[in-house]
Length: 293
Image 1 (cartoon, rainbow, N blue to C red):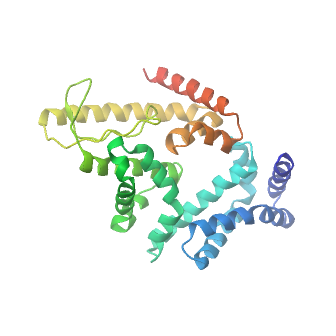
Image 2 (cartoon, helix red, strand yellow):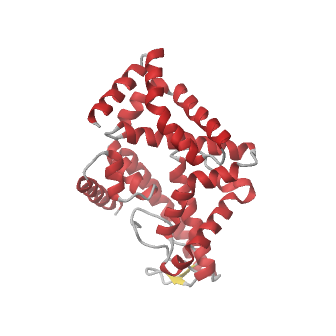
Image 3 (cartoon, rainbow, N blue to C red):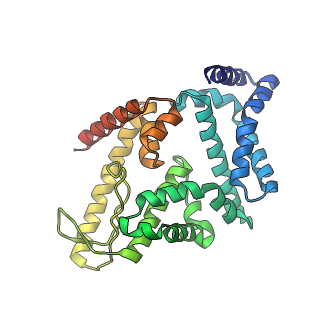
């Protein structure tokens, strides 16, 4: 593995010089994983070939910057970096299909992202909803793809598509669970009735979403608006604090709280010891909480 990683790093270094030989070497390294991901993500072989060409074309466009991207990624293994880059290019292709109104765009979206979305819904579902998890997943997909994928196409950049998609999926799962298993939730601080599903934050980890029923109340609505403003201010502060973190710490936080990865998965992906990942999470989250109080 170390020898293969050294070779890959040499190839990335050569790509910065933009030689034909370096590109040929990169294609030799990347074509197997790209083809495997294309077959898994495309509904038909013809689409898989199109997706393969799309991903390799994107790599060719970005070839001179790949070494710098790898260095900035915080990942220690080239294979992990390549997997993440491939996923990003597949997401770009899926968005293109949806925006162009391709007849099989929905099929391709489901095929490529079903595993991730199922995992996000499962982790977000309250205990009462887990016996009907398949129905909840289907509801989420139906809502994602409604109105020609309006919610998906609302992605405006500023982060990874999968981080954005996970937030949308978790909130849709909350809405579906609330309709099916809803109950009123009272704020522990103000005593006001809240009709807003609890969203994902840095404190969520494995905690389930608490679904609620709607219960119109003018006083509660005023309190809710005040809470929304305060929450928006805290989120702005949090984003600024995250921006100031070292790159590797930020990558670990994003993988844990945005992508929903478990520490062991993060450790494997980043080539780090799982205890080290736990230490980074504990230390960084504590520092963020202290800064926000």
